[in-house]
Length: 124
Image (cartoon, rainbow, N blue to C red; front, side, top):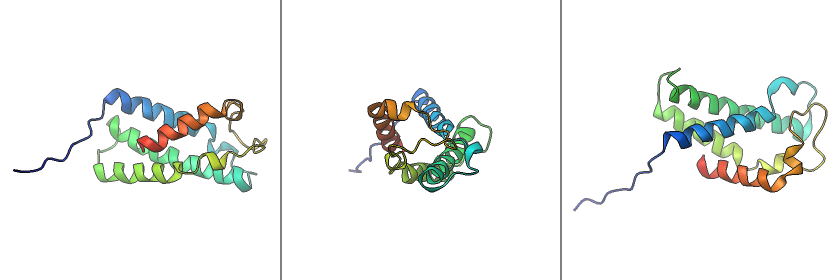
């Protein structure tokens, strides 16, 4: 008797919601403000850009804008997973500077931000 490995079935609506969530997080730290950023703010912006680039590549494949390549999707997912492990550590209190595009809502509703980052880690 052959043992079957369970497969994860991914709902397309779920993927769309995940992509929208990732894009929303990416918008928080768009590369426009990179000039002049230093320290944790620069690290945060670089991290968000890396995740945004990976997310865009996955989204383009899912939407048919680029050729679907499962190996590339897996690599981009690993990038998102790796980068998402310390999102909270990149948003310490007091790091909302003029050059940052992080929204004040992150700190105003920290439990929600924690929840979103936990979901991101689980999905990636």
